[in-house]
Each structure stands twice: as structure tokens, then as C-alpha cells.
Length: 361
Ligand code: ADP
Ligand code: DP6
Ligand code: CO
Image 1 (tube, protein in one colour):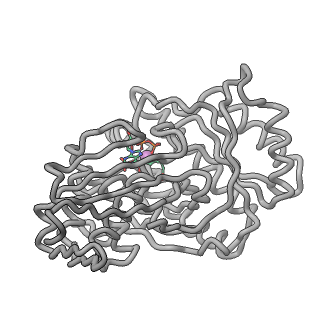
Image 2 (cartoon, rainbow, N blue to C red):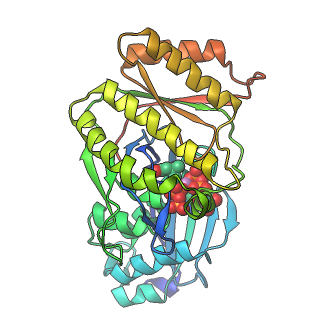
Image 3 (tube, rainbow, N blue to C red):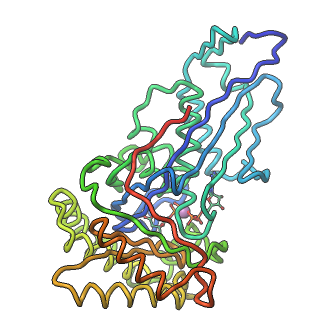
């Protein structure tokens, strides 16, 4: 370590988009390593709309690891943050900043403390996958700071230990998380199925039905489901494996009818196992259900589906329109039926494309 009077600070900033699963992850076989009970597939969103920005800094003057989320200090004591920090520090390399006269040897990272400041530009813990963007960004920015040599797939296995869905946010485009077979989780990682330019006529519209924090976190919700739902095993073993194969084909062939059918039915089945959990978990509300009816009616009135919908662990609708023209019509219908800030309880709309992972560091 070096630098004038040990007063130096080294910083990296990164920006990571969130991702929305079209074949959902719900249920773990290992709570500590975060190993899922089925494969999942997602679409990464445009970082200019829904993303996390994280700045990580290191300095010999920091006396402990600390983290701020949306301007408020949060504890880093949770096992998940500790797993990510431990895995990254174990892979840290030498870092040199000649301009600042700083040299950090890889062993130094074990003693140096970090300050982490993270912001989500969208509702946190409201079912728009803030844990995905947040933990992926944390891992990505720390990996840059500590000069890790691992590729994005290897980093995804670290992000997975922060939040399962985070492993899919290390790539843009369409991403698959393999559940893996190994007990130590080494093969439970994400790969890119198709990049962001593939099928770029799709447009994503998000209806923020409620930006409030949900009552049941994804972590505790899926734990209760695995413990109490008789349907979850059927879903994980019989239904999802077939859907994964079909969904991969639909993405490769840009087959919107199959894509929409699979995305909608998988979202509906995920919410069905939530209802099958005891006590039941209600992530969607009346407005969510009305949005589903609106899209279903429209799709059935056309020769082929125009819009796919999917809801994560919250009431907010993520809709995928087959092209820009359909997106414009969808927005028109939504604004007519669900005007924002009215008694329909809809907070706002966010519109975006599929996207690229951006490194602002
Ligand atoms: P969501 O549906 O938004 O992903 P979860 O219940 O899965 O909701 O996770 C929410 C939790 O994720 C937050 O309470 C917080 O612990 C963590 N989280 C969210 N954003 C960030 C972030 N930017 N950095 C670190 N952790 C985050
Ligand atoms: C409904 O990844 O948030 O969004 O692994 O416990 O952090 P933890 O849960 P999380 O669960 C996401 C569930 C989901 C579906 C999905 O993203 O695949
Ligand atoms: Co989450």
C-alpha cells in the first residue's frame, strides 16, 4: 500500500440494469448458497430506465465496511452481503494507480475496508427486481475495483449468492440461469442466450401499480412456498423444464406467439403457487388482475398475441409489446383504462427497450 500520508481513496462507479424473468425462479434447494429448484430465463431491461448505480470506494482511513442504500445506511452484517464480499476479496488482484501513487497488493484487500453507496432509480423491494440490479451492481463494481480476472458468468455465480435473480443481471439481452447440479453451486450460473440486438423490435412497458414496499420479501415468500405448497414440486420438476426448452426456441426464432403464451402462463403459475402457499401470499392486487384481463381480451381479439405480461413478486405489471406500433397502442389503452394517479391506484409508467449492461466506471 502507498500514497501520500495514507489519505488516498480509490473509487469505481458502475450501473447495472434490472431483469425481469419470463420463466420464473421461485424456490431454493440451498438457502445459504442460493441454489434454485429450477432453471429460469429473463430479459434484461434498458439501464436508462430501471437501474442501480453503485459507487464502491476503498481507503486506509476507513475503519469498517459500510453501505448506504438510497442515501440511508444499511447493515452489511447479513449473510448474503458477507458471502459476496468474501468471494470477491478471495479473488482480488494487485491494483496500481500510478497517477495517484497508489499500489494495493492482493493480500491488502483482506485488511482494507470498503464504503459502498448504491441508488436505485426505481422502487426498492416493490417487485421490480431491485435485489437483482442491486446485488449484480455491487458484485460488478467491486470486481472492477479489485481487478478480478473472472468473466461475467463466474461473477454471476457470486452475484447469485447475494440474490438469486441478480446472477441474470450480469448480461444484457436474454439470459438463462442454470440451476446446476453441484452441491457447492459451482455450476449454478447465468449465460447469455441472445444479445440485446437480437429481437430488438420488442418494447417493454411497466405499469407501476404500487411503488410501496411489499409485505412479503421474495426470500421469505419462496421459503414458505417450498415448505407448504403441494404444487411447487410439480411446477419445478414437470412444468418448468419443458417451458425452458420451449422458451429458448421461441427466443431464437423470435416467435412472439409462443413467447407470450409461455411468459403469461408462467407468471400466472408463479402467482398460483403463491396462493397455494400457506398462509397464502398475494403479490398481485385488483389493478394487476384488471391489467391481465385487458391484455388477454386484446390478444384474443387479434389473430395472434400482441402483448405478453409478467408480474414478479409484487403488483407491478411488466408488459412486452411485439413491436413499437403495438407498444403505442398498448400505452393508449393503458392510459385510457388506468390513468396514473387516479383511483385505479396506478403510480406511473416506465417505458424501455431491452438493453446492454453498461459500465460507467
Ligand atoms: P425486489 O422485488 O425489489 O427484488 P426483494 O424482496 O427481492 O425485492 O429484495 C429487496 C431487497 O434487496 C432490499 O430490501 C435490499 O436488501 C436489497 N437491495 C435492493 N436494492 C439494493 C441495492 N441497490 N444494493 C444492495 N441491496 C439492495
Ligand atoms: C419473482 O432473487 O429476489 O422475481 O434469491 O431470495 O434474493 P432471493 O430472491 P429474488 O427472487 C426473485 C423472484 C422473482 C422471479 C425471478 O426473478 O426469477
Ligand atoms: Co428480488
